[in-house]
Amino acid sequence: DQQVKQNSPSLSVQEGRISILNCDYTNSMFDYFLWYKKYPAEGPTFLISISSIKDKNEDGRFTVFLNKSAKHLSLHIVPSQPGDSAVYFCAASGSAGGTSYGKLTFGQGTILTVHP
Amino acid sequence: DSGVTQTPKHLITATGQRVTLRCSPRSGDLSVYWYQQSLDQGLQFLIQYYNGEERAKGNILERFSAQQFPDLHSELNLSSLELGDSALYFCASSRQGFSSSYEQYFGPGTRLTVT
Picture 1 (cartoon, rainbow over the protein chains, first blue to last red):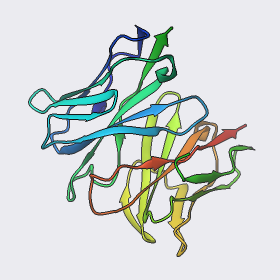
Picture 2 (picture 1 turned 180 degrees about the vertical axis):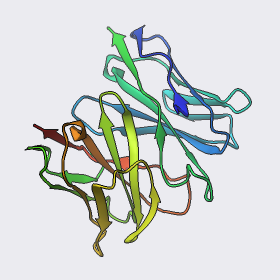
Picture 3 (picture 1 turned 90 degrees about the vertical axis):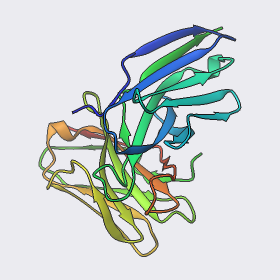
Picture 4 (picture 1 turned 45 degrees about the vertical axis):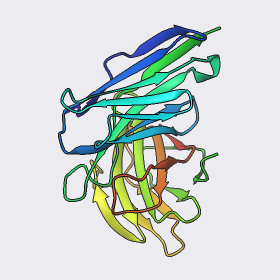
């Protein structure tokens, strides 16, 4: 039961352009969403998050958009840089009392490659 | 550097054996989480401890157990190891245990290889 899905295994983008990474979820009890970046042989690094009461959150070059009715979120990276090349995971968690509380449910990841 | 430390970095052992993975959370974090990343399953939540008590459980096998000590470090014990237990094991920590809105910070992981 894949509650968080990243349907694109990989994405290739030119330096300076926008990278858009997508994520869909099925569990309506999720109320907090996060994006992590992972380099090989390292742990996931927290990037940006968004609460379900918002539809947008920005942090520098990174913006996360949440569409609750579509159960869809996306991460925009503008402008993309070669150092952004990594695996990007979206993750979701739920509020207290639900089965998704206290844990992150991860998507399968999208490999982003930014070409110079 | 997330501030979460894990030891050892690599572990190679044989089937049937038992191993202990160790995690020290970021300073001030009360919650510790364990995740398993295998090739075919992605990152899967195993278990959470908050201030020494088990708080949430995922798809953790009965052969696996964990605990959090008074100094807040945590250990994940894996016993009767099978080939399929080969994976990366990550520990994460967060500030609070009662809210879903606190980000989790991950350690570098322990790569377990069972031969």
